[in-house]
Every structure is written in structure tokens, then in C-alpha cells.
Image (tube, rainbow, N blue to C red):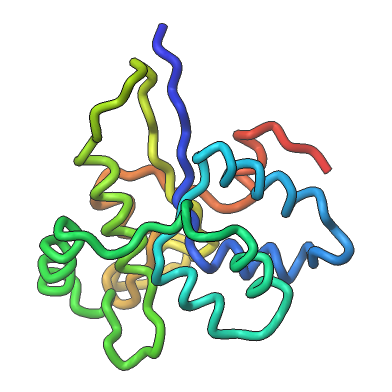
Length: 176
């Protein structure tokens, strides 16, 4: 049986959620475990997420900056190709009026990682899972599913697993 290496693509909503419920000065363990996932190459994010977070002034900004850039992926040709298609089909997902709008980039990165696999030295398979603490349309009881589009909605459309932060902790079998 092949080993599957889970790689998490983290949205800013999950970092912000963790900051609110587990401030790093009180709860160090969850932050250390995330740092370890980054070091293992199993937690990645998009440069737009980092930019969104580092626009503030709190310990989360400092923590994200301390992690460096090896786990942060920028905009690629693939993403530039898929983002206009997403915008055309679902114009409310991309909000040009927002100073920061990382959501479409998280989805584009997940699509890219799902569809474009680099040659690997091992035969281990990777599963890319988006971690977002946003709620899907069905969990918000909206009449029109595409009225307010969130990351979990798009992950469902593109067949990308999407979980919240606590489900990530459960999958990793973390206990605090």
C-alpha cells in the first residue's frame, strides 16, 4: 500500500482563528506543531495569505515572518491562467475592492498542486488539503449557493479536500 503524504494549504482564516483561541504567549504547543509541519514541508500557504496576515501588528505577524519564505508559494503562470476562469464563472469570489483577497489564490494554489505534480524522487503520493475556517454556503443556509462564495465552496467544486483547523489537528493526532 502506498504511503500518502498529506500537505496542508493554510488559509489566513485558520491562522487568525488559532490566534484568537490559542494566543502563542499562552498556548505554545499548537504553534510549535505548525512550525514542525512547515519544517517538514507539509504546511504551505500562498504569498497572498502571508501578505494579508503581515499587514497587521500582533504576534501572528511576527510568527509568520519567523517562518521564512520556503513554505510560501507565489503567483505562477498556472494560477494566472485559472484565476480569470474562476472570476468569470464566479465573479463574487474575487473582490477587487478588498485590499487583500487571498481566497482565490489559495484555491488556485490548491488546483495547481492537485493537477501539476512535479517529478518526485520517491514514490510517495501527496494529497493536498486546504485548511480554512470559513463556512461553506450549505453551512450558512444561503438560498443562492453562489451568493457569497467561500473557500470550502470552491474546494467542493474542484474536488479538493477542505477541512478546518481542528480537523487538521485531528488528522495529525495532536492532543493538547
